[in-house]
Length: 229
Image (cartoon, rainbow, N blue to C red; front, side, top):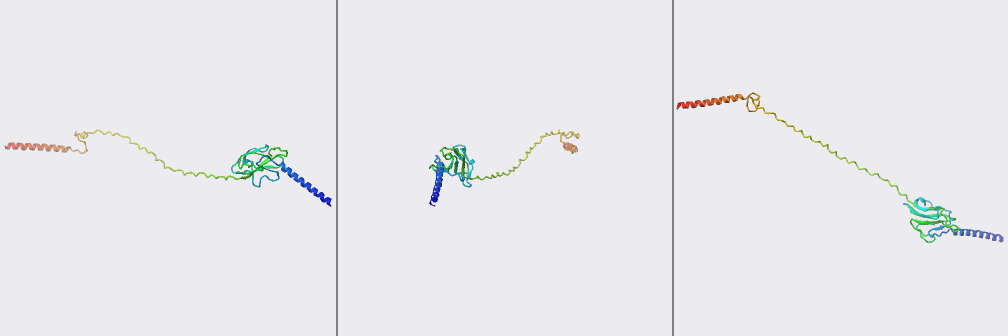
C-alpha cells in the first residue's frame, strides 16, 4: 500500500516538474532585445478584443510580413491605434502599446511614426521574419457631408430699353412763290394792284368825273367873279 502511494507521488512530481520545465522553457524562449514591447508567450487567443480590429490599410507602413522589421509611418484620419501585435519565430509575440512602457522599461511613442517593430526571438536566439501583424483600436467614420446646392438667384427682369425712335426731320421743301401777276393783267385793267376779284374800275371813272366836274365848277365861278368886277 505504501509502495503504491509512493509511486503515485513520484508520478505526480514528475508530471509537475515536466509542466514547470515546459512553461519555463516557453517563457525563456519568448524574449526580445527590444525594450519597448511586452513579449507574450501565448498565441492561443485573438490579437484584439472584439470590435477593436483595425485594417492594415488604416495606416501607412513599410516592411512587415516576410521581413524582420515593420515601420508604421502614418495613421489615417479618424483612426486611433491602441495595440500593435507582431508575430514571428517559434513562440509568442511582441505587444506594442502606444504611450506605454514595455517590459524593458522604454516607453513606446504615443503617436506614429513607429519604427523597427519586430517579433520575439527564436529558440536559438535569432531574429525571425514577421509572419503576421495586427492593429487594434478604434476608427471613427467621418459623416458624409450633404452639400446643399446653392440657391439660384432669381433672374432680374430689367426693363427693356425703349426702341430708339429716330425722328426723321422733314425734308425742307423750298416752295418757290409764284410770280405775282400785276392786277389788271388778267382783267385787262393794266393797274398795279393785286386783283382781288372785285372789279372797282367804275368807281375810278366816277371819281374822275367828279374831279372834272368840280374843276369845271371852280373855273365857272372864277370866270363869273371876274365878269362881275
